[in-house]
Image (cartoon, rainbow, N blue to C red; front, side):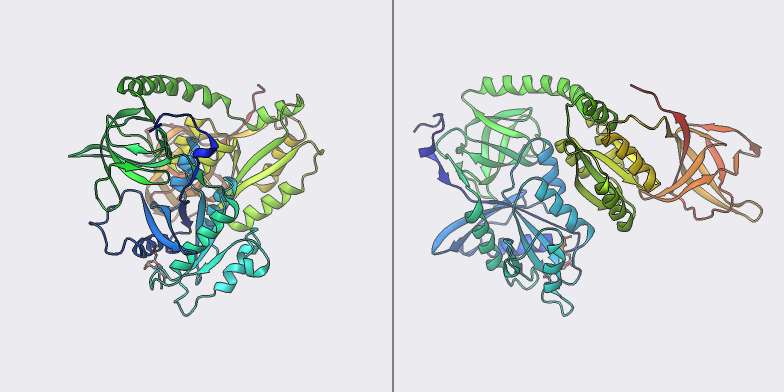
Length: 521
Ligand code: GDP
């Protein structure tokens, strides 16, 4: 039946859109995904027990025709960016959920930035309209500022008022998704060939071994097929759908849970079907070797601000992509505004591809990886996962505590000048484990030095939950037991007094910096 035939346009058939639900925490993403799933009218009586497999498909009647829509059932944009970072684009349309009583919040903006950066069209679900304080008009108005203009205001974005709790507006929302798909997207795939697609969720199950939910992107996957997903391989032993029922085959846009792989693939790993088992295994092994080398090479290839400046001098680049994170929205806006005002010659462009409030997260690093961007943190720090990802991917993350120095450094870079000869270098990080109140010295932080060395003449800042809450503090006293010391190294305990500054708590970090001459590469 031509399973392994080469693709031709004649073989293309319409496939269902694949939808991801994104939005601010507590705005109702999970509830909405449940409501949509329950609205599955055509399947009628519920199948087996519903399973969470990471995605589900519903059927609906649209314009008199039965249509399917696939939903990725992991709310939020972390899954979205993790997959994009691996080069997988599974989402055709994003539903942006905004609670009508709350309006636009930081993660709303973050989500829409991610969708826009990926070129994925957005449908807005204005949720919680059952609440008396709901103001759906305000949501429309607020989003206009971000380029999402509602149809009723002359724009081309569909907004639908819903109540995930009461189940109202759900059909209209699904219709809006299909309208958006039909208006601008050419969603087709050839079902008559060997399958390929993406793993969207995977785990190790005690009884069943590796179980991976995959989304078919083209072709048809069948029980018995030899497949390779990332570096995992095997033969499809069984497939289950979202109702826990066995299926024999799965067509484009269909999510299924696959058993039979020898290990657990990662979200975003591409899978393909091969003609023989042996081939799947060879590909997997080769990939593993390639991956190891690529990781090293990739880390070296990422652009840093200095690389950019150098490449600019040689006429090899023209765009600098930036991600801005800050402790408060005012600072982020001020920084963005000033940066966009920098005058450079026409060939050079500064693109701010994302901005947000809060610590630098893994999803920021993922986005920076995809678009080769530099992350600028203003009075914030990366969370541990982000720190690890940035180191692994070689992403340049810069921290500033004075807006002017951020602007100055980026401006000189955009003008092709390798500027600052001095830079602030982190010299030590200590974790506060106890706070002693002393009437003579103010509060004393009982710390353990986690990395580097804390020196008496360094400048200190206090970090709470990834946000700098105080900066430029002098270390007034540094003691081990009863002795004044000039430095304390990693893994040693110490007492630090920050003079008049008293707002310290257990769990805060004290980070110290020193000015050092910057090496020229
Ligand atoms: P998520 O964090 O975006 O996944 O949000 P959830 O789906 O967990 O919802 C957060 C809270 O809002 C829960 O207490 C929900 O019951 C509530 N909620 C969600 N949708 C609605 C709605 O349409 N109306 C009302 N009144 N509450 C809702």
